[in-house]
Image (cartoon, rainbow, N blue to C red):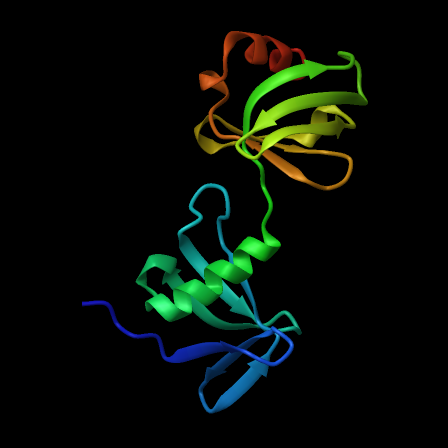
Length: 156
């Protein structure tokens, strides 16, 4: 049996998330994943506008449906990490370079400032930061098609 959390969440008239627990209400809390790429469903903190943790959730799936829906809705509005399925072309093998990629959301263009903007993560994942601050995820570089791997290898 899943224990009910000792807090609740609601939205105020302006759409802000409100934490209710421990005899207090905190307006404008923000859910923050502990490991957004490696373990997105585990470890979630609710953080006050001042940056203080007000609640910890071990697993998002363990939240009651109404709380989980509010948390997931808030996360979806804040998190945007398109997953690269294929690298279609790069403008040059020197940096900065313009990449055209296919993501699960369609085709996108990103500007890679330098090789240091490609971070290796555990499990063969890569996180690519473009010049506008958008993070693109390659979940498993080894599973990319051959042409994409060859283009990527030029930058690794």
